[in-house]
Image 1 (cartoon, rainbow, N blue to C red):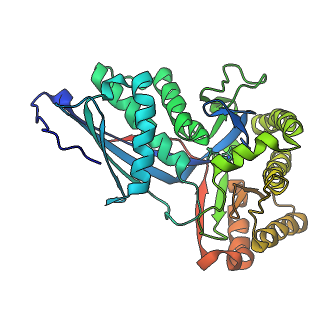
Image 2 (image 1 turned 30 degrees about the horizontal axis):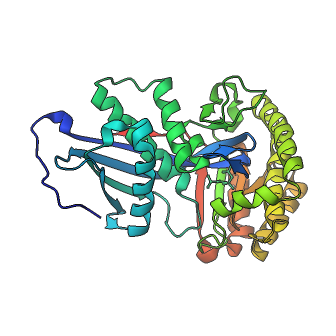
Length: 361
Ligand code: PMV
C-alpha cells in the first residue's frame, strides 16, 4: 500500500507533526436507525458518552515529496491490520479534498488501540472514528498555528466523525450528546452532534453503564446493512415519529432527573431497535436467549427492590445495565450474584458516563 517514494526528512517542525487523542465510545438512548444521503440520520438521537471504553489514536504526519496522493500506514494495537487500514485509507481519501486539503502529499502514520477487548462484541467504530476525527482536526489546527480547541474545533470533529460512522458524531462531547435536528434543541443538526451537557441533571453525570458481554462474536449484521433495511421497513415512518416523541420525553427526564421515565423510554428504544430488525426483510434476530434471560432478571429485580436499574441494547446481544451511582453497591452485587453467569467467560465492562475526549501529549 505504501508507494515507493523519496521521503524528505525536513527540518521544518511543521513537516513532522504528531497529535494524539483518546475518545470514548457512546451508547445511544434514543437510537439512530435509518439514514439517507451521506450519513444523515432519519431521526435525532441522544446518547451517553462512556468513560472507560475508549480508543487512543496517534497520527504522525510527515511530508511526501514526489506524489500528490496521501500515503497511510495504519497500526492497530501495534500490529498491521489490512482490513482496518483499507477502511481508514478510503475514508481519509473521501474527506481530503473537501475538508483537509493539506493532507494531499502527506504521509500519515496512524496508530490506534482500544481500552476494551477488541473481541468483546462492542462496536468500536464510535470511539475509533471520533479519535481519528479529533486527530485530523488537531493536525489542521497545528498547521494553522492556532491552538484553540473551541466550539468550531469540536463541531468539525463531530462532522468528520459522523462521515466515518454516524454514531461517532456523538462521542466528541461529554456525558450527553444529541445528533440530528430536533425542534426541542436549539442548534441541533443532522450534520454534527452537539453537547447538551449543561442542561442535564447531576444524577446522570455519574450514571453507571455496565456492559454484560453475552457473546463476543462479531455482529452478524453490519450497521450499514441494518440502516439500509429501514428503507423498506413497513414501520419506518411510524418509527421516526415515535423516535421524535421519545426524544422529547427522554430529554425532559434527563433535565429533571426523572430516572423512572428515563428508564422506561430507554428500554422502549432498545426493544424497538430489535423489533425493527426482526420485522425487516430479511429479518434478523440479534438477541440471544441469554439476552432475554438477563432482561427478565433486571425487570424482576427492579420490581422486587424498587431500585432504578434499567437496560439498553446496541445492535447485538450484549446488555448495558444502567443505574444511578447511589445504587452502585446493590446493583453490582446483583450483577455478580445473578447476571454474570449469562456472560460469555464472565466478561463485563464496568463503565459510566464520562467527560469525553482528551488530548494526549
Ligand atoms: O454509527 P453506525 O452506523 O454504526 O450506527 C449505529 C446504530 C446504533 O448503534 C444501533 C444506534 C446508535 O444510535 O448508536
